Amino acid sequence: MESQTGTRPSNDKLTICGPSTRSALNCEWIAGQLTILAEAFAEALTPARLKLYVAELADLDQAPLASVFRRAARELKFFPKIAELRELAGANAELQTQVEAENAWHLVERDLAHNGRDGGPHLDARIEYAIRCAGGRLGINAAFSASVTDEAFTKKRFVEGFANYEAAEHLGLAQLPAALTNTLRQVASGKALPAPAPRPEGEIPTAKVAKPIPRPLSDSEVEARRALLRRQAEQLAGGTGVGDGA
Image (cartoon, rainbow, N blue to C red; front, side, top):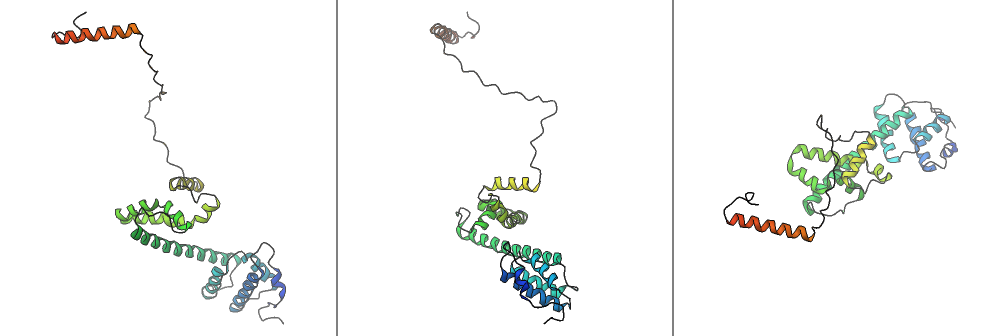
């Protein structure tokens, strides 16, 4: 039996997902949601088109997709293209990350208030990485005491670190010190690193030469040095200048 929108219920939709996709159940759920969405827009959704949509959405989780389908039904005027649905899913994922980062920042604030700036790492790995990106507990605590601007900048670095944790972990950077991590992030993003201070015009760099180790004095040189010191002492005692006598 064929529906009014042209979508024929069939077990064919279960074969859309191959070995590389999440699961056949996820594909079946997506197909069902697309069918409902097509009904809302009075859209003719053929089995071939349904398969294409499901195949291009099967890599996304159900949680963001559920919100995408609700938003599409309420906010869009025409049945969405695949790209539109993926854009909505990406926006939802970014918003979810922002909310999670905000909650993590409040958790760090409470942690600093309770354990102080010297408290050791004990939060989850993602939050600890964001803390290092923001300058560590010492840097965050200093920003709280400095100004609203410093706190906002530090929070921005924390949120960026929180959002980039999965990529950093994939590249093996999640456990590196904060200074090195920030440097590598600058390189990866194409940002130029600070250039060394320019040398004054006309200045010629000089090579550093190691000072030679003085050789030990011979016995005769030691005796001559002692005689010279005795004469200088006698001249000083007699009120004459050091360089006056022989």
